[in-house]
Length: 132
Image (cartoon, rainbow, N blue to C red; front, side, top):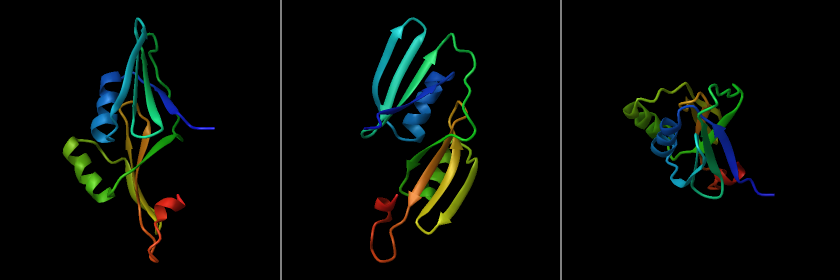
Protein backbone atom coordinates (compact mmCIF):
# COMPACT_ATOMS: atom_id res chain seq x y z
CA UNK A 1 0.00 0.00 0.00
CA UNK A 2 1.23 3.49 -0.84
CA UNK A 3 0.30 6.66 1.07
CA UNK A 4 -0.92 9.22 -1.48
CA UNK A 5 -2.05 12.40 0.28
CA UNK A 6 -3.31 14.07 3.41
CA UNK A 7 -6.56 16.01 2.96
CA UNK A 8 -7.12 19.25 4.88
CA UNK A 9 -10.42 21.08 4.75
CA UNK A 10 -9.59 24.78 5.07
CA UNK A 11 -11.45 28.06 5.53
CA UNK A 12 -8.51 30.21 4.42
CA UNK A 13 -7.84 28.73 0.97
CA UNK A 14 -5.49 31.26 -0.66
CA UNK A 15 -3.68 31.93 2.64
CA UNK A 16 -3.21 28.17 3.07
CA UNK A 17 -1.83 27.79 -0.45
CA UNK A 18 0.64 30.62 0.20
CA UNK A 19 1.69 29.06 3.51
CA UNK A 20 2.41 25.62 2.03
CA UNK A 21 4.16 27.16 -0.99
CA UNK A 22 6.15 30.01 0.60
CA UNK A 23 6.80 28.74 4.14
CA UNK A 24 6.95 24.95 3.67
CA UNK A 25 8.24 25.04 0.09
CA UNK A 26 5.74 22.74 -1.61
CA UNK A 27 4.90 23.42 -5.26
CA UNK A 28 1.36 23.21 -6.60
CA UNK A 29 0.82 19.90 -8.37
CA UNK A 30 -2.71 20.60 -9.64
CA UNK A 31 -5.85 22.67 -9.03
CA UNK A 32 -9.46 21.61 -9.43
CA UNK A 33 -12.88 23.22 -9.13
CA UNK A 34 -15.13 20.13 -9.28
CA UNK A 35 -18.30 22.14 -8.60
CA UNK A 36 -19.43 25.65 -7.80
CA UNK A 37 -18.13 26.79 -4.42
CA UNK A 38 -15.57 23.97 -4.09
CA UNK A 39 -11.86 24.44 -4.75
CA UNK A 40 -9.12 21.83 -4.42
CA UNK A 41 -5.37 22.16 -4.71
CA UNK A 42 -2.71 19.47 -4.39
CA UNK A 43 0.76 20.52 -3.26
CA UNK A 44 3.76 18.28 -2.92
CA UNK A 45 7.33 17.37 -3.63
CA UNK A 46 7.68 13.64 -4.13
CA UNK A 47 5.18 10.83 -3.78
CA UNK A 48 2.97 12.26 -1.02
CA UNK A 49 0.83 15.39 -1.45
CA UNK A 50 -1.22 17.69 0.71
CA UNK A 51 -4.72 18.21 -0.61
CA UNK A 52 -6.38 21.47 0.46
CA UNK A 53 -10.15 21.59 0.04
CA UNK A 54 -12.22 24.74 0.35
CA UNK A 55 -16.00 24.41 0.35
CA UNK A 56 -17.89 27.65 0.80
CA UNK A 57 -20.73 25.82 2.60
CA UNK A 58 -18.35 24.59 5.34
CA UNK A 59 -18.26 27.41 7.88
CA UNK A 60 -16.19 25.76 10.62
CA UNK A 61 -13.08 23.62 10.27
CA UNK A 62 -12.15 21.44 13.25
CA UNK A 63 -8.53 20.30 13.39
CA UNK A 64 -7.56 18.08 16.30
CA UNK A 65 -4.95 19.38 18.74
CA UNK A 66 -3.04 16.11 18.63
CA UNK A 67 -2.50 16.03 14.88
CA UNK A 68 0.58 17.45 13.19
CA UNK A 69 2.38 17.25 9.86
CA UNK A 70 6.17 16.99 9.85
CA UNK A 71 8.52 18.38 7.20
CA UNK A 72 12.28 17.92 7.11
CA UNK A 73 14.42 21.06 6.88
CA UNK A 74 18.18 21.43 6.41
CA UNK A 75 18.59 23.62 9.50
CA UNK A 76 16.10 24.47 12.24
CA UNK A 77 18.16 27.55 13.16
CA UNK A 78 18.08 28.87 9.59
CA UNK A 79 14.37 28.11 9.34
CA UNK A 80 13.67 30.09 12.53
CA UNK A 81 15.38 33.14 10.99
CA UNK A 82 13.38 32.62 7.77
CA UNK A 83 10.12 32.38 9.73
CA UNK A 84 10.92 35.59 11.62
CA UNK A 85 11.43 37.43 8.31
CA UNK A 86 8.09 36.06 7.05
CA UNK A 87 6.25 37.01 10.25
CA UNK A 88 5.47 33.38 11.19
CA UNK A 89 5.55 32.69 14.93
CA UNK A 90 7.35 29.64 16.32
CA UNK A 91 4.70 28.09 18.58
CA UNK A 92 7.13 25.89 20.52
CA UNK A 93 10.66 24.58 20.48
CA UNK A 94 13.27 24.06 19.44
CA UNK A 95 13.26 20.60 21.00
CA UNK A 96 16.08 18.05 20.90
CA UNK A 97 14.47 14.80 22.13
CA UNK A 98 17.51 12.76 21.11
CA UNK A 99 20.92 13.39 19.49
CA UNK A 100 19.58 12.67 16.01
CA UNK A 101 16.71 15.15 15.69
CA UNK A 102 15.74 18.72 16.50
CA UNK A 103 12.39 20.34 15.71
CA UNK A 104 10.10 23.33 16.14
CA UNK A 105 6.34 23.69 15.84
CA UNK A 106 4.47 26.35 13.89
CA UNK A 107 0.79 26.63 12.96
CA UNK A 108 -0.71 26.74 9.48
CA UNK A 109 -3.40 29.39 8.74
CA UNK A 110 -6.17 26.99 9.84
CA UNK A 111 -4.61 25.98 13.18
CA UNK A 112 -2.89 22.74 12.12
CA UNK A 113 0.40 22.08 13.93
CA UNK A 114 3.39 21.80 11.60
CA UNK A 115 6.68 20.30 12.80
CA UNK A 116 9.86 21.41 11.05
CA UNK A 117 12.48 18.74 11.68
CA UNK A 118 16.25 18.70 11.33
CA UNK A 119 17.89 15.28 11.30
CA UNK A 120 21.53 14.77 12.26
CA UNK A 121 24.17 12.39 10.97
CA UNK A 122 25.42 9.78 13.44
CA UNK A 123 28.88 10.15 14.98
CA UNK A 124 30.24 7.06 13.22
CA UNK A 125 29.40 8.54 9.83
CA UNK A 126 26.13 6.69 9.38
CA UNK A 127 23.28 8.84 8.11
CA UNK A 128 20.55 8.98 10.75
CA UNK A 129 18.04 10.13 8.11
CA UNK A 130 17.68 6.47 7.20
CA UNK A 131 16.90 5.58 10.82
CA UNK A 132 13.78 7.74 10.79
